[in-house]
Length: 328
Image (tube, rainbow, N blue to C red; front, side, top):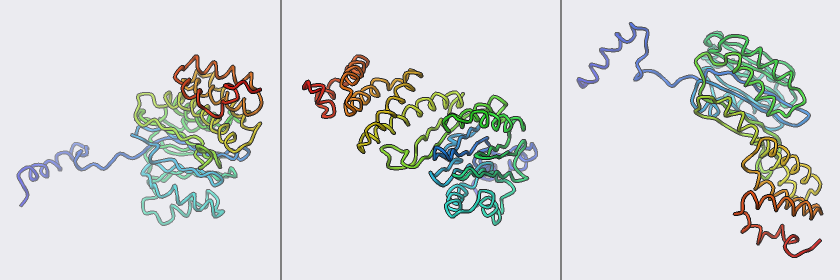
């Protein structure tokens, strides 16, 4: 027999329903209604996703990307299996439009799904089920697909599309963020703001070149997630250039390592990155490996002036031995 407390709770259900409300005890988890962009830069060998929502940790649900394959955003009443399944289909040569058709064909809840898919080649498609909450829809073109639901209106995806197209020539991460920021400025998610995420995948783009996660940043819970994501994008671009430089250094690719590392330094100086001392330290190492002893000394001196604690490491670092023993 049910306890008194259970009987009381059950008796309240018709009353709650009559008010048009849902009891917190009966409600399911919130759906990741959101706005997103999936995009590819075939020339750079990059694919990526950017997404924002009034939903906790949207980056843990919506985005999927694989270098040389494509990127996927699955949202609304999200079916997270769409991500890996779409990437598998793309890897087999299926087009984004065909992939969406296959994914939704046998999905009994397809009318509540929304997804965007882009292939590494730049082919793209978007899908919005007829039961997604208004405003819901998407747009696609060469290299991108934008989509959203429970939005302030269609101008959100229009603004995202325009920002992405107008930023041609810039790094993919910057273009993804520009689209997300434009969507937010146009009204974004009509419920408000909470989280955002941005990913870029490139073959060998991960730490040390061991995987393809060139950029993978998230803002899980913030009053201004787009603003905070923008700060992280700046740091992520520095880190990506730095990682490319250091990976090239570790693999003996002289010249290439110096090019990436110097670009990382310029980017870090431009945004006033707090990692500047550590970056300068590695600039010193790579300049020295490329025969620029004077430049290496200057970079190391700046690094130690900004963070004296690096001195202990520098005193025994084999990569800086030539600066300690007076070798040319």
